[in-house]
Amino acid sequence: MSILRGMKQLLILFTTLPLVLLLNCRQPVVQIIQSSGSIQAGNFLVYYQRTGYGQPLVLLHAGLQDHAMWDEQVKALSTAYEVITPDLPYHGRTTGADTNLLACDVIRVLLDSLRIQQVSIGGSSIGCMVAQDFVIAYPDRVDKAIFVSPSINAKDLPADSLSKARYSLFMQAYEKKDTVKAARAFTKIWATGLRDEQPDSVRARVELQVFNTTLANLRHYKMGTGPRLQTSPPAFERLSSITKPVLIIDGDKDLPFISYCAGILEKQVPGAVRKTIPGTAHMLNMEKPALFNDLLLSFLKRTQ
Image (cartoon, rainbow, N blue to C red; front, side, top):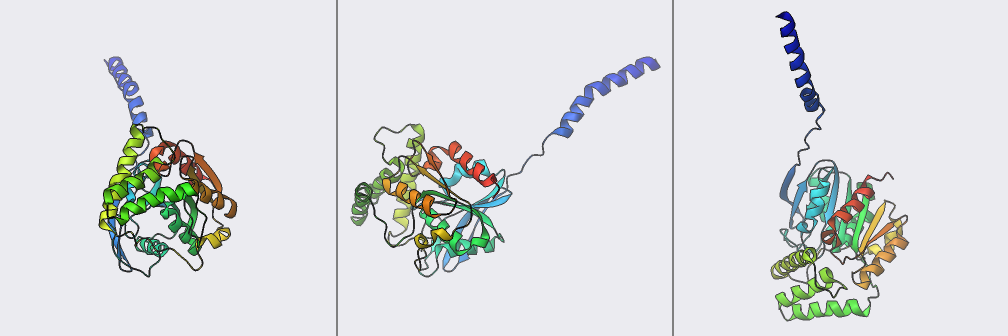
């Protein structure tokens, strides 16, 4: 009987040991922490979302859009980074008005309120201009910078005839207070870009989101208002002072003016790296999120 009992004990040991080892070797489940709120910055009540755990990453949306344009980046990056996506002044759920406070200082107040000292910061279009101002004004608070579908804050940059013509259609509709037509023109400028073919399902979804968000912003805010940029001097005159690692990402189907701006940044920002995503227009992070996220992660993980 003792022999039989011993064999049973061995059998139990050998059948349960692999399960015990498997349980002990399991990777800990990463809990994605998500919160949202609003902070006071001057006369603005700035809305933000904060997702994930790790090194802080601030992403600033394009004009007439909001924090939701970064949803695919938040999903992909929040397992390794704390991703902060605010609504810029006069956009989305941010409320109030302040004609004195610079947008880069709005971001500084937000970070101070969240007790975050240093971040990597990225921005698309007008968000890119705010990011440029922040990097120049507060270099000690920046680890890396990502300039997406970039514009540049400058006193005067030459715009090509195609870009001016497209934007003129948008402004004509807006001045007639036809917000639906204006939102359609805006969507054609930035989500459709230089493409004539019918959109696939991904692009159609992106264009619908851009249209709906643009329409909501046009109806809620006046076009004469927007994030206040540094003008004395503008970022264009101080690009060479940026010493942080910079990644520039643009799309080959965006308007010529954006490609021109990307080229200026590539030449004038010391050490800047430029990546062009084929087959995408202005909202490239929404069109090809997997490729965009890979570029972003590779850059963020790079040692200086």
